[in-house]
Length: 346
Ligand SMILES: [Zn+2]
Image (tube, rainbow, N blue to C red; front, side, top):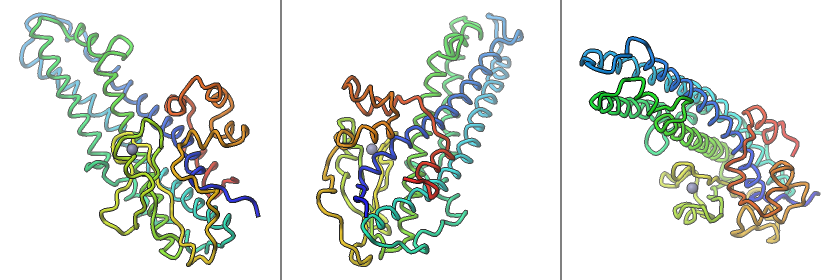
């Protein structure tokens, strides 16, 4: 029997790949919004808005409606993209969760019945992808952001016109010539944070639903696992290592806040499974992700971070969290499934 793989370490390793998947989602969302802002910019450069003086109230209204339509259409595109993407992602995360259970149990010498990891229904997958985040569904978040951006635009436009600026000059101030002005940057930054938070919500909901479905004889609850570095928020530091029952309506589930990096691991019902809990030497206690990774072989570090990134990290020039956050690599949902899903050969 191979040495049991440590479930906390495995979960940590997955966060690196999940980060790369989030990079993919965030970058698609950014591209859609950059296109949106360049359309707003182009609209404000239409010859019909060229005059800088005596802009009538009616013209203002017409210009604002045009801009608002472009912004709404842009966020609608973002919504369509993320809605479809997150359904696929929920399906992959359930595979990953099923695999997590299987690995933990077989490594300890037990057997997991196929029944315990049967797939969630399509309806369940869809509802996981649509669960509220901090009180609002993702679609509601996008329309909320779209409205906010519209209001900000109207205010800035009215202010600029009052100051005697024309739409051309106002557009330059807002979006910059290359879409790098303050409004465009803020819109894209907020959308990226939202997209990352939504993927984290889907990941944790899909995982815990899969664990819960396996039954209390396999797993009676889950343990909160925070990123355990100096960037962890007080709320996540406080929840780290705490165990909750799946059917506890008050049990918290990550994300605890925007851009939360916490995840969960299933607690196994060793007694009901008829296997002995692997020894304490595999128990990580409260080690951080970085200290866990330092204890891995060079080959494992390379496999998790990628060789170039692992070299930079080993040189001590960069924090692990900076490395993971700024990792430019992207994984699609299909690539993620191959790494960790039922097809994976970990
Ligand atoms: Zn957190």
